[in-house]
Amino acid sequence: MCGPFPRVALGSSGAFSRIGGRKWWRRMAEIMAVACDSTGRPRKKLHGLRMLDPGVFSKLPLASADSCNVARNAGIDSRWRGTYAPTSRYVRALILMDRIETHASSAYWSESVIDDYQNMELFG
Image 1 (cartoon, rainbow, N blue to C red):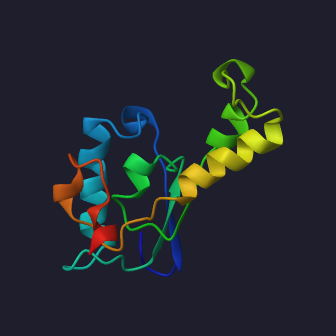
Image 2 (image 1 turned 90 degrees about the vertical axis):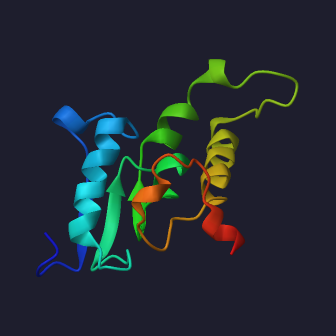
């Protein structure tokens, strides 16, 4: 997996299609055992497919990630209600992107973070 390629994309399908589920995290632990060195640092750059949920990417040492989250949710008018609801899909997309960008990917892998939903590494 990490041989000649400078970047490895990690995706989810089949039995592991529910990202963030218990079975999925166990599988990610197996993958990280191979993809990372003994200190938890990735051997190659890792890209997470469908992994822009902060509860996921903040626990993994990803160099990059993607998702269809913004494209899907910026266009769902019923989700944006109230007095201060954004008036356009463009502004909704900016809000979603801003919320995602306030989180950082972990610098290293540690299996102990699976049940922790906060990236405490940001606080030193």
